[in-house]
Amino acid sequence: NIVEERMVLWVVGIGLGDETDITVKGLEAVKSAHKVYLEHYTSVIGAPKERLEAFYGKEVLLADREVVETEADETFIEPARTESIVLLVVGDPFGATTHTDLVLRAKQKEVEVRVVHNASIMNAVAACGLQLYNFGVTVSIVFFTDTWRPDSFYEKIQQNRKLGLHTLCLLDIKMKEQSIENLCRGRKIYEPPRFMTVNQCIEQLLEIEDKRKEQAYTPETVAIGVARVGRDDQLIVAAPMREL
Image (cartoon, rainbow, N blue to C red; front, side, top):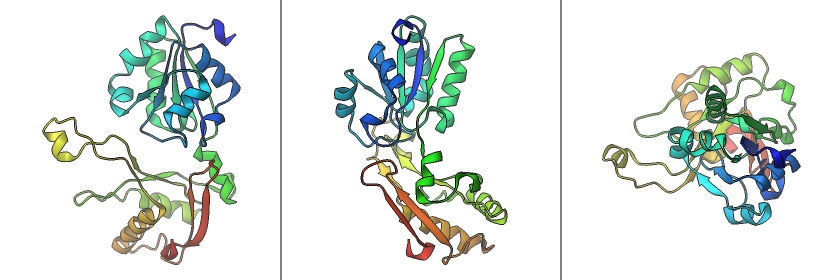
């Protein structure tokens, strides 16, 4: 009985769409919790915090990168020794290594953890028509900067294509990030949120192909861009990379 489990750290996946995508089990955990947090930097849900609060009937506290990565012990783990704490995660709880690390740390401290799974982009990407069985290694594409243009994804895409497999590229988002200058000066000033578009991703992929010239892909290679999967306004477009 969820209501009777008063000393638990719940990690609850809330899906991809909006506040109504939470499962019945997840909603019961939220309603019985002492505190509810929403992890707010590895992904974002298609509904504002206020709509979540209205639907769940609970106050929802935003947990940014600093809270999840450096203040997890005092925010989630230790309080869960005496009360029910819920961390809401967009998609599935184990879609990001950050959440796996949190669960492991809690278990090491002998705090009970319960996980409620949900849909994530790792399986919902099949909405584009490709079979999940035919996907290879997933890669992350980060925003390039003037001094940092990583291309570690290139070999993985190349290897996937040699094996006849698709590659899921997860595009970068920046939530509550500091500029290098503000970080160095210790100023708590944050940049506006940024979300990489399919167009930006393709530009970066083609830039690296132009540099490496190993034909892991070409401007004529067909790619599929998916945006806002799971929401009412989701968009799926297939075209040669040069057109995306």
